[in-house]
Image (cartoon, rainbow, N blue to C red; front, side, top):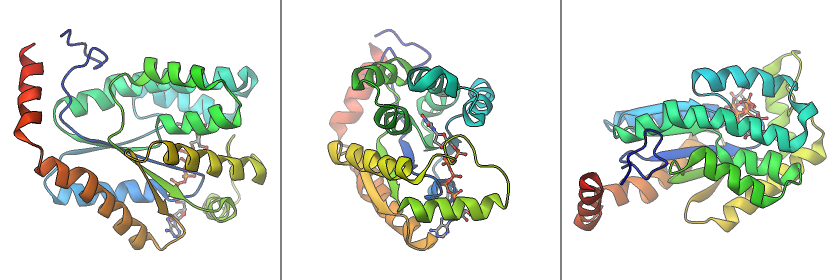
Length: 241
Ligand code: T5A
């Protein structure tokens, strides 16, 4: 096997990759922090990251994307720019962490492109999948938590936090946009139930955290502990190849 540094050649991946997705103000950043603390308490090395951003070059693109300067390129151009940022994020933050056995928890990832640019921008799903293939290669999330919240409630949280400051490019979209966005996220979760879990984000912070932790325990921690000798033998064989 060719061991490419970005993992696209199928390099061994030992860590686990969790993404949190959802609409504006759903509580993703809050829950990333709580989840990271909880995993660290279990002695797991965790890298907390976010999109757009998460690495030096991707953070530079974040400014462009959130300021609205990329809007003039249309949904296709925006999707490509989000994917360019993702390539740097995967190569320089996510893959190196997973390769050394750390867990990665990301505040948004490729499902945001599927929902925001794909579903809302009415892009051909083949383009979105091709961009995903190029940008993320093997760095596919093991678990995705969709924080589900009525858009009115999420936007209210965000506007309170903003405290008079201007909304960013996506926050500024109307209610119909955010309602469709919620549908798009739910649709993704429905089509990939093995990877995705929907959590009610209207609940109090601690209840949301508890629901996320239940998903992590049942889907990742228990399966990691029980990982059969077969899986470990396969990894060893991949390392030798
Ligand atoms: N985007 C991103 C794309 O279009 N395509 C892509 O491919 C990608 C990756 C990123 C924008 O980019 C778009 C989507 C986004 O519009 P961002 O600034 O990173 O923008 O913003 P968001 O990811 O949307 O995150 P937000 O900061 O808006 O919201 P969060 O992280 O979901 O929420 P959080 O934790 O900051 O909480 C918001 C407020 O609510 C409170 C918090 O204290 C905070 O004040 N809160 C709660 N209140 C009550 N109950 C709870 N359970 C609460 N949880 C949090």
